[in-house]
Image (tube, rainbow, N blue to C red):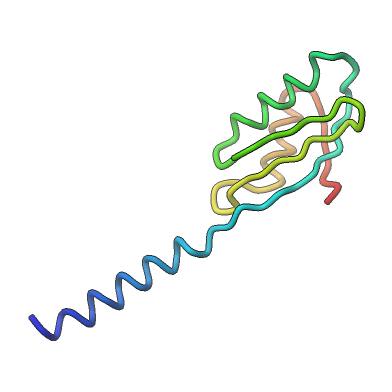
Length: 94
């Protein structure tokens, strides 16, 4: 039993280390086709439905969307795919 304790400790450290690798990232997308005041809401909702998205801010004036997301659950490519599927092609600015 005493020999198993270090093995359990090592396993717990490895599992905890995997969780620690996840990070919240922020990306700003340039969003095309936003031409009315309803467009930012549609873009926001399309991004908010992507698993891993934590926060979305859309600017009609700047034609951008800033997205905070968990990099273990989604990618910038998935975010641009979501806006494109809603009719608003986008690309990563930064």
